[in-house]
Length: 111
Image (cartoon, rainbow, N blue to C red; front, side, top):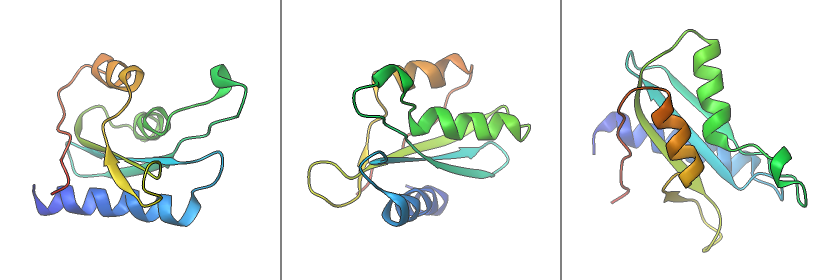
């Protein structure tokens, strides 16, 4: 894992640690090919799953809105099982969504 990967994990963990709530338990970091970093939170509305949005989609939208088109690396962080931030695999819908953006990317594993 590179220093850039470690920094991406740190940025996503920091956001989640500061802002997690009953509606936001997952953060996401995305680094573009030119090194720009975007981090975002999910927004889950209980009982209204179709109205919820994953952090991956928020961060990708932020990147596209800022003129980015190539993703280099992504990381999902969640506070679920242990009550502490941990690296997660993006959900199946988000992996499909990110793949549909048309480029390959790395998902670092936390050691």
